[in-house]
Image (tube, rainbow, N blue to C red; front, side, top):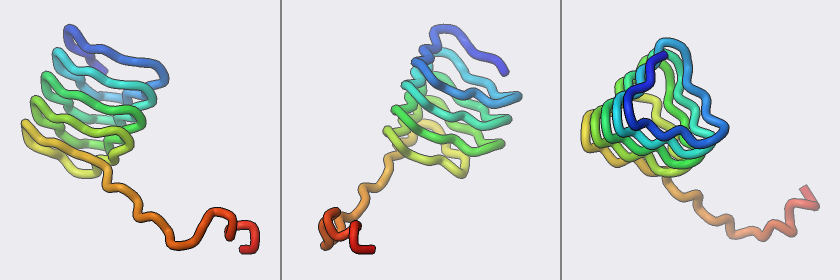
Length: 97
């Protein structure tokens, strides 16, 4: 694992084996970067993001909170988690299940 210059790592992160984080990257809390991942320069990873094994994340990529990345992405990408649809049932009905 190698980490470049001016990389900010908040608490609770996991950076996997043989991964490389390039310069000027910000990694918020509880981010998981799996093994053999190549992260370009000037990237941002929001809270609770997950990056799968053997991927390349291009320069200037932004990964929003809670997103899961399972394939490599080119530079200047924006990855966001889709919102969950609200159920028509209330949480109160869960007791009866």
